[in-house]
Length: 374
Image 1 (cartoon, rainbow, N blue to C red):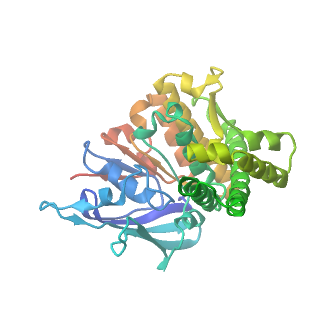
Image 2: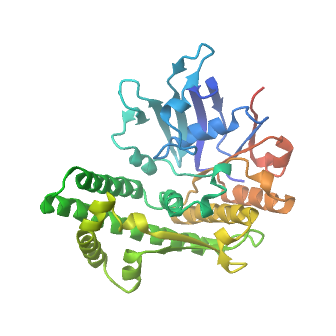
Image 3: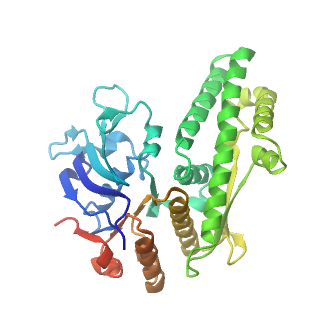
């Protein structure tokens, strides 16, 4: 196995959940964290996930991540890491901002504070799969869109900024409907123009990422279930019919303007890029993935994640860093070894957790093995 070209080589946690201080230096290779339940394995993955836009893999509040000492006092967390990115070494840091009255965190890259957390996608590419995502395919379209958008980050570093800008314009439009009985049409038009511009760009980026992931799925080992992603919505239909991005934007603006009365009554936008439907197909059974068993749904999610990692590697020449929490416990021996071989052959720095280190024996020759909680 070649060294990972996109890898964390040092991680330092201070006052993060169960850790008062934890520091480790590692080779640019896969990492296995083994230990008893409650030892703090997932806490390490969560700390790493903060180097991606959003609230991390648990979607927790910042105060929940703070360490609580025996006296009950909450100590603000700090997480730092060294990232090997090709020939570069980049210093990353994030911490809860104690100077702010509201919950917020500071993110720095090489000592420079980022004004937008969405800019993290230009430095680090992270994907993850956790037990909390087991019900993702049956938990509603909002969760699926968020999942897809995170996959899109691997291919379009600006996607997170577009999503943030779209949601900001939508929130402002919703706020106007809540506060004013007769809002200014020009004011609404400006926000709707922003929603349309960012929304159509979001749709195009999602569709392009899906094309890449579906293509990479064809190269996945046959032992993994073949899956396919699709995206459905008003803008998607127009683009499929040959409309230009500008025509799709104009159509979304017109749709938003026409639905103002209904949106005012609902206090929310009833149309737009936030209403697109994400569909995952289990191709082997020719069914929607959500119709499969829980085990089949987990297998589809893992297949899509690894296909996205392969596609990212083909597209950018470097795979993402992948966080896999308690994944191998649900795989038989053959699938487990196939996953390990895929990680090793693609030089992915995967961070895997499990209670028994022996479950990772097939990856051990290529990985850093860390025992947590001793």
